[in-house]
Image (cartoon, rainbow, N blue to C red; front, side):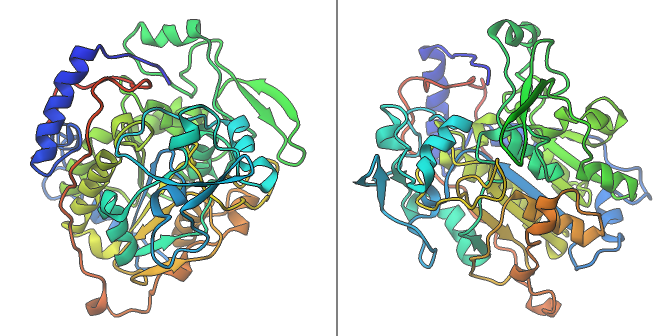
Length: 470
């Protein structure tokens, strides 16, 4: 990720503004400006908009909209380790063969932690799950856990809807492969993030553009591919794949879809997985289906969401360490609230997950399904009026599971063996429930953020000039 460092004076000015918002019950950054700014023009009068059209599409279940949100870099035990009824949780971790008491996690972590392929293997440590102390700071803060009052909205949704406590990242590695599993059920053999030298990174940075992991990466960017069977290196190639994705399948069936992500000049653009798909990034599908995440809430309110929506946030709201967990909660809260207040709610399933463990401790050894996965356990929340309220789902799942729900609901072929082998979440829903008994919407207030750092985080990626909340 590119590092556009912020001077201390600029950081403190922004931090003061955020602190004021937090005192008013906000605590997230620029949500009014970033989530509610003008969206594309609505459909002409008299013509059905995307939301109305989606409701007329034939589906297996009474779900006409899926919203699949992928956040960043937190393990299950880190966020839900104290949740009543969740299995295989603990307040005592293992560090290099010795027990260590988990500390209470701060809203802001002091730094990012190692979370690439080698870090994942070191953390798992041949199943001992005791290798998370990969830096001096990680030796303390990787072994941390949030209290219920720190994550009230995450926990509210877990109590009200469905929390999955046996859910894993698809890939035992960093973000890039896991985001590809989200849209394609495969990483195409990528076992880690693409590699770019400082000189290659400067090509886009000098144009005012954010780092990319896709087909639009400058010459010299590459990703190494490995065999899923043996784990052995196969080749290096540009991060621009030709495997089929679920978006392409939907388009072929006349089903509309969208991927909301950070814009090309915003940090977080790296998580737009479709940028690494040649048949999308270099065709009209890009213009037709890729949307600015800054427009998401406005599009929900304007009834412009299509049948299937994938969402990745801007970096600031992503929950990626060291950034605020309260900011991430508030961003997702605004998205969920908007859906609950819309006519979509009765027909919607929302999946909220985190793309990998981010270096934070979890005690559960991942199952080995091939040379790349599964990865370390992460949370998954399923929010819908049709779910079994208060259910803790113990079935083993991964990112391909929500992918399979989409395929099953709209009658799409399964794109990989991973997708075929996993469940499709049908078991967490009660589709025989009568409509008067559907779970009612309950929009939540925003949560206050914790104390802000007095200086920019070591891994800061920019501090927006305007911070406000409604």
